[in-house]
Image (cartoon, rainbow, N blue to C red; front, side):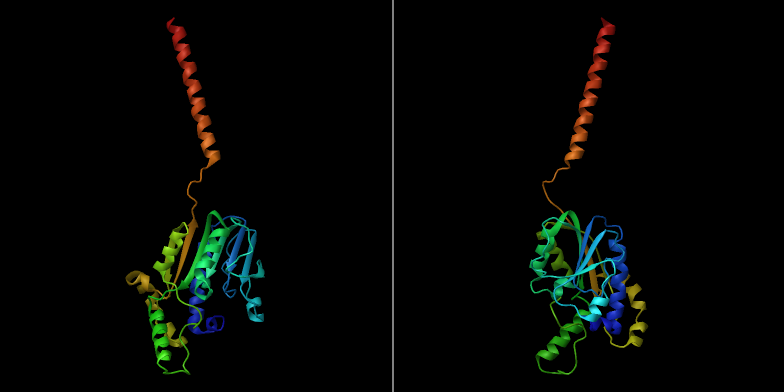
Length: 260
């Protein structure tokens, strides 16, 4: 994935994801934020939480270590068993993490466990229902029949793409509520930087005419816990109602005295 991001298509995708992640995490408040995977993308640079970490599931190389945000601490851990207490994090960002995870559903369950109620998860992934996804499937079919073995796939060959609707279903099963979602990167799946720039008009047209067929998507979801009660708010409301009742009683007694 890191080497592919250095290609023209990879830089184009990285710029789009960085721009929209900066806007998505800017107004998310709390104390602890975690980015799982892809240290080449500084997903938390625009977030203002005091404790921010970038974690990988393997030993990062020199290039990956240099790409880590300066405000974050690099961690090496297993995404299937996160070493955090339950309900201890306020924000978790998954940039292409589920696509490359050994067990994406277990990784998402771990994220749900470590998030606090009303905490947020941001998921970024490739959209299989796009021109980029179509070219990737055709490339796999070509390799499956033994043609063009020396020609690499257009996208990284590791992992499996997770569709947008499938991801939403997983999130709903884990009591997440999807707060927002967005697609992007509508240019043709070409390797050349020159042809990629010629297709820049497709970004504006794609958002208007075929918005769900972007090459990438990101989703922001909130962890909801059913049965929770805002105790402080309920107590204040009860105190107000009691005070109002006492005032009404005093007024009634004063009227009775005047009549007498």
